[in-house]
Image (tube, rainbow, N blue to C red):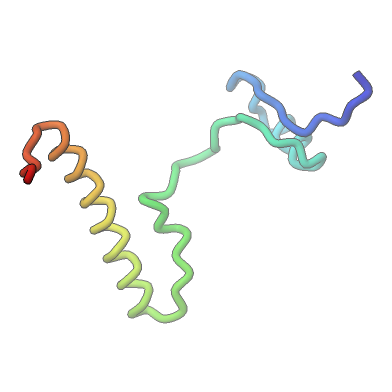
Length: 83
């Protein structure tokens, strides 16, 4: 079609290291599943500068994740009190 490919959707069988490198080199966005384990609640993206703020960010991240899980359970079992 004489167009530059910018996106690629493929089955996991095509997600080889060679194809990943080829697409990355040419800035092609893929639908390949991530290699390796995923980060736990995004804790790998903490940009704190000191140890105390890093601990605080982790604290709030974990408690936010727990709150989200609690909301799902409350909605599921109808435990919300309606005014």
